[in-house]
Image (tube, rainbow, N blue to C red; front, side, top):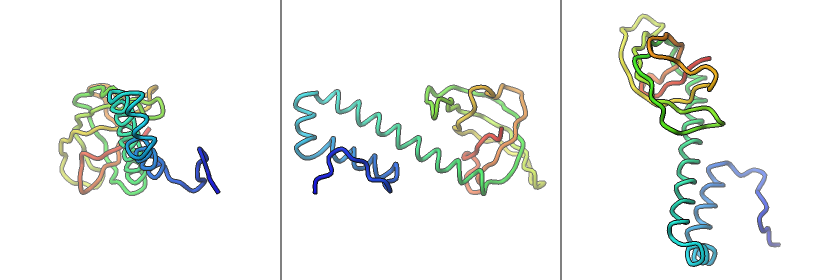
Length: 143
């Protein structure tokens, strides 16, 4: 039986993006899309799917960090807007001086993370974070 346009109930966001990418870039649908809408349109669609994949990856790593990351406090050295949004919250590039809670020496790191639009950290402010012990540039701000 044909299942046109119906979403599989157990399909993950990664699988949905992979299926959309395959549909838009190959086969009859891909050829017709490119022929009628043009390569520029197809490039914009692929760019949007890339941004969606990046958001999914960042969200997944954020969940892992919230559960398994190391606790620390961090002084905001600088903050820069990336122009990206995840669930209407800005993704920012933070430069931090991190003081781990477990007595290890302080260190500096730079990374991108999502912050609440109503609680954006400011330069000089001390914030609570959770960070990856393997890659300290992977961190999340704890509200």
